[in-house]
Length: 254
Image (cartoon, rainbow, N blue to C red; front, top):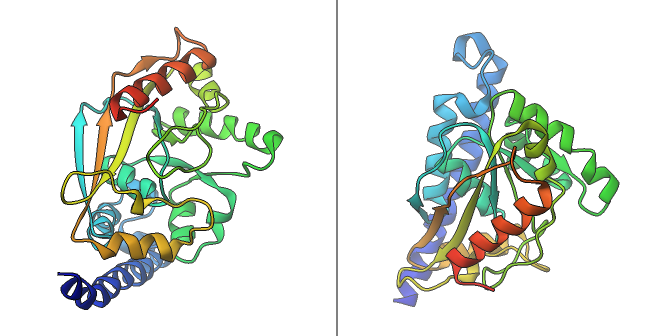
């Protein structure tokens, strides 16, 4: 079986590369002729060819999305545990979202272009003051009628634990009186066991994570949408504590 998987892996890599390069070229050509392509005046997340690309990208990553619970219909703040760079693709496949992204992601080939086009809010997590300055930009996204996802752990884990949640980003939802929905994210293998290979932690590179995603038969990304909370009735510390408790309970973690 391992010989078969090793033989197939180059085709998986080719499929992924074709998606990234072809999708990037296509979207850039659309922006080069916005009125002809129909992208003029549209947010990239609302552009149907881009939504198709996100769906195909997830497939080319060897990941199948499964959801549980009901995603809130109105715009608001989604709060998720954080495992990998793949999380953003998984969550965007479930719903068009704006992201809080690490500042260096903007410089990544292809992916950086897409995150800029999606109006992501970039943040330098090494500097608390700089991180706090992004709150008004999150508010702007909410005021525009967009939904925003944040990862309050501020870094990734391998999925076996939760790190402390930081309450800073919840402030934007409190100021806007938005709803906040916790989302529990877990990656599993074809046997239904936790798959830590999807993680992007420590010294992992983008390609190392990708290689692990493509090395097994199938990776399942499980998203559980939990009961939304009303930020007009809770302060950011209360939201922080309750969302972590809800996510931990859903994942069976401490």
